[in-house]
Length: 418
Image (cartoon, rainbow, N blue to C red; front, side):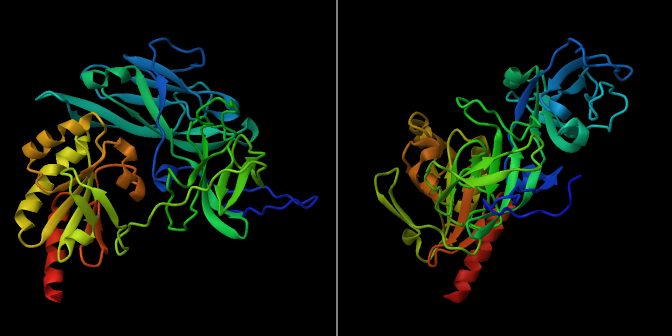
């Protein structure tokens, strides 16, 4: 039985001393805490699996799948009942006994989505269920998130016979590395129920990650603060490894590694109230851009976007409207494009059609664009509203009406100080 308290890692080698780590199981909510999710695919079939002992009554359009997660290494049976014109139903064998009539009800809610063609409407379902993991003798229940694209949506044809799912569970607590304590998460990204991870050395990933809040900002950076459980990692200048990880993840050790790997330093803190990282770059028009130095006396929006980014282009009319309305009052925009070496050719046409008349920086390096890497941009659109005089960040990722309201407030405050 897991206790509610987190135990602290002590890296020690004294004889007879148990230096195992026991973090606290978080059955639900780990995806939000980690700041990302790792979707897995389960193929749906019309063929009834041998593991199904008793099905719910009245199934008319049953599709079956077995997820690679369950207590004692067993799989978890899932059934979707889909018939045209009726709501989809999800059944999950949460207790792993093959009987789908004695389980906790699964969450499953449909939401209407628009297709690419005018008038097209589809239904996407989201939900989840509790499933059992761990050894049979001490199995515990954890939450899986699940979703299903409309199988009739031609834009999602590749997922017509697929149920997507991801872990919403993990272990949290504090670990001590050297003389410092850090907040940490242990995550089963592969959603296999086995925290030992894939032992295949040729595999791209073990499927299990240790996240360490190395800069103590209260967040986990998936690119800079996450480490594969079967590979050496460096925190604070020392290289460590995980050892003796149990299947259930309730116990493991951290030992100093014989190998040495480079430390990946945390990205800049670009939260509200902090100073924006300055940069100098060549603009799309060939002129040198100095940010935020070029925007003295103004309020400026640093906008990371790309022509291929649907959410970016859907938000762009609002950005353009705000620019036109408040530009004369002292509002400006500096764009940073994440277009690649092919899509960058579309930028002039897209900018002209959209009314984007402000300065742009574009080096054609996609997600490895120099400024994007410098700023540790992991998703777009990403925006920072900045005071051009002080470089202080006034807002982050403002959308819709919130952008215009924040700009007007910042301009008013700047005018009041002059």
